[in-house]
Image 1: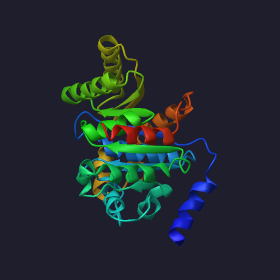
Image 2 (image 1 turned 60 degrees about the vertical axis):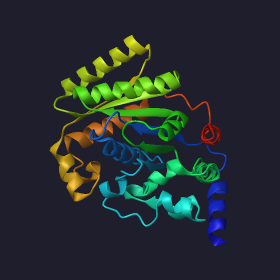
Image 3 (image 1 turned 30 degrees about the horizontal axis):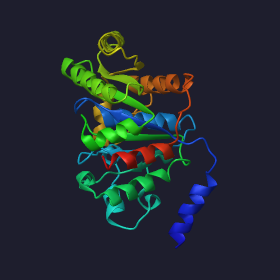
Length: 285
């Protein structure tokens, strides 16, 4: 009963706010540093006094808690199998970052009954007025269920590297999303660049190809260097913006987030509640 009262207080105390902007973070293939970019991007937003949450939807392969050196007590799987609310399973990471761990058995999500999925989405809806940004850390590539979450987000952030295979897969991902929703705002981050010139050239080529073949304008958030401090941070199980604040990649991340927040970005034309209602309609398709 006390837990229910606390949940209600959380929702009521934040009612009337503008609602969270939901960003799906995706990649065409694994191994490009998507989750690491997502985590450190979120932490850099918190440094700008934003309230941020990450939902780990990388089915069966979630590693956000490992990157933070934490062991999740409860996961989304627990939410699905019990009467707990989303406030019971939400965890706190560095800088008061909120995150929901997927759990090793999260693959069960794709086999949920309709009523169970609806309960899951209803719980997610409670986050709307609590945060400024909610990041959905999606799995590499795209699945039928994952696509529904991607299309429900306000924005899609595509992480790639200059490697030809990564670029090809990232383009295929964007094309697939575009064919489902031509209006979806798509942003690209080029990770692991040997030089700033390589990052600029890769982003420029990527933007040109999508405009030429898809007639789609995408935003380039920037590039991140191939920095040795990242692998050291991963081994230490610390976000790289905390492990070495003076590293080239930490500086580049801060500059990227400043550009992201400094741009006159239009407010979402629909709320998080509308996203959830749309998802509920899609799960019966």
